[in-house]
Each structure stands twice: as structure tokens, then as C-alpha cells.
Length: 368
Image (cartoon, rainbow, N blue to C red):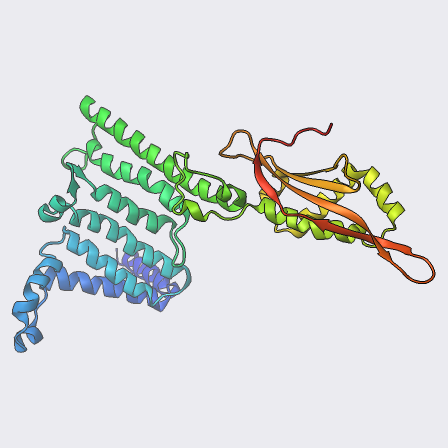
């Protein structure tokens, strides 16, 4: 028997030797707090000395546990766990801080079941404490000191529904039970409602991502949308189609700047292929958004006007108008002349573009 006790003692000492001193200090502090709170109680000699006992005594009665199984005990353990975690580093700090969260969540949920608090948190006969506790659980599971990820918001209704429905599966004590038929209907509605709420929250985040990746959508008219609300409809941003066409103009000018007039004429004969080259060049210059592939640049040489071209930028993505839209810009190509002695000589071309028209509803009419 003595040898067995010696072996157990040696094992305990070896384990304590491996543990860092800060973790050992944490264990000692927790044991001390338990002994002070649950065995000896807390006295306030200094408060009595300064005549402040009457002021702080109601607060003390509210936060100091009168028995071990109380929400105050769980809150105090969580507080001391967090304080002690500041003394640790690495994984030990994470483990001890997580212990604080594990005690805080049931303690906070228990606190909200007090008569006065429960009355305040009941709205239209719906007790909202499970949704508050669910938010705390999501913070514990997913949040970091610098960020609350979207999965925390999406998971919040589902976790809250589980917390709200869990009492229906527990008898008075620690035994589980199968909910009665009326409770099953209530649980089904509760779960489906919160799943729907999670879907709407996820849809909200997805919409924000779409508006970020496809900024042209922000310039569209959302007045008839069932789920997107423009706070200031009169201050919509300018469509990126305008910016893209403005970038095409200097590219067209630089393309023709050093060509002779005969080369320009040959260049215009294959204008469709040249427009495709211009589109590739302009897409390499503008900021890269996924929506760039939804813009299509077309061009045509206008009939009856010598060397005037029309650039058409067509939006192929989703729009509030089922007909779609496009932007148009007309550019005139003229010879640039110089008059040296003894005769005039043609050198290069001038490209002058007009203002952008649009957005024009529909698609461009085909070339005759």
C-alpha cells in the first residue's frame, strides 16, 4: 500500500515538474478562490471602517454567491480564468481563456433566467435569452480579438435555436426525454424559422460580395428590388462603362498616332479585329474585377461618314432592366496636315471623340 502511494506521489510530482509554473499558479489561484467563496465567505472590514458597507452591500449580495451551484459562481470562475490566462503564454493561455468562456456561457444564461431579468427579456411572450446566449457562443467559437467572421453571424440563429429547444429534451434532473407532440411542432417551427434567418443573413453577405465584385450593379436602379435598398437613390455611382470607354479613347489615339493615312485605311478595313485588340488592352489597364468579362466592346464604321467610327460597350451582366443596356461613343479620324515648302505633306492622323451616350436600354441595332 505504501509503495502504491509513493508511486502515485512520484507521478504527481513528475507531472507538476513538466507543467509550467504559470499553469501551476493558475490551479492554486482557482483552489484559493473556491475556498474563499464557498467555505469562508467574504467580509468587508475596510468598507465598514470607512462607512461604505451600506453602499456596496447590495452589490455584494448580487455578485457574491451564497452557494456553490449559482450563476455567480460560474461568472467568478470565468473572471479568474481570464485574469490567470494573462499570466500564461501560447497554448496554455488559450486553454485557460477557453475555460473562462466555458464557465461564462452557462453562468450568463443562468443569470438571464432570474425573475426580473426574464421579465425584461420577454417580448411578446418570446424569451430572447437563448439568442443572446447564442451570440456569446458564436463569439467564443468563431471570433478573434480583431475580427468577427461572417460564419459567426450565419451560425448565430441555428445555435440559438438549439439552445432554445434543448430544455424540451431534458426532464427535471439530468435525464433526457422525447418531446411531446405539441413541443415537436414548436421545435420544428423554431428550427425552420432560424434556418430561414440564417439563409437571409448569408444572402445579405453574398449580396455585399456581389456588389463588391460587380460594382456596375451599384449604378443600376434598385428601386424595384425586394431586398436591396439604396439609401440615397439620387446619388448612385457612375457606371464603370463610362470609365472603360474613356480608357479606350487614348488607346485608339496611340494606335493610330504613328500610322500613315494609307495604313489607317487598311487598319479600318479590319476594324472588328482591331476592336478586339483594343478591348484586351483596356481590360489590362483597368482594375481587375470579375465583372470585366461581362463587358463586350464592339465597333463599327459609320455609313455616310468617311472615317468616323462608333464604339459600343455592351453590358452582358444582370440588370434591373431585362432589356440590358450599352454605352456609345463616336470618334472621327481626320488627316493631320502640315504645309512645308514647296508642297503640302500628309503626316499622321487626328482622332477626336465625342461625349459618351448612355446607358441606352436594349442592344445595339445590327449594322446594315
